[in-house]
Image (cartoon, rainbow, N blue to C red; front, side, top):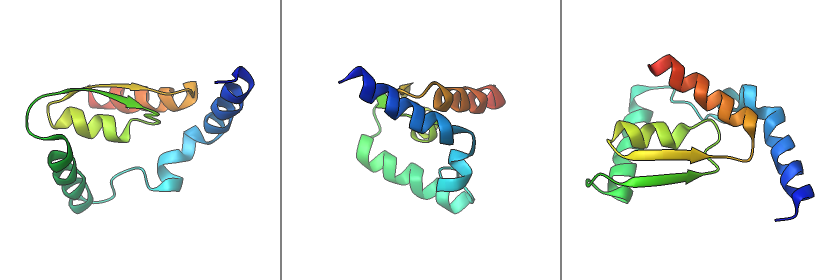
Amino acid sequence: MNMNLKEKISRNWDESAALFDQLYGHCLKSKYEKTAWLETLKELVGQDRRRILDVGTGTGFLAFLLVELDHQCTGVDLSQEMLKQAQKKLDKLE
């Protein structure tokens, strides 16, 4: 990928990282929503423990759900600010 394009993509996501979950609904607002996501992921990924690479993980929304289902998940993203938000979420869980 063109380095200039990578920088533009990264910068775009860096700018929205702090409010991303609130603005775009990437947080679970109810127990029902979480249950629906977990059930959908169980159907898609299966019951066997897997190693999953979440490319474009953003703030880690799917990665955290996959870990909750006992999968090993690694999230990667071009945006360092998105990864910082994911790390903040992880720190709150520990």
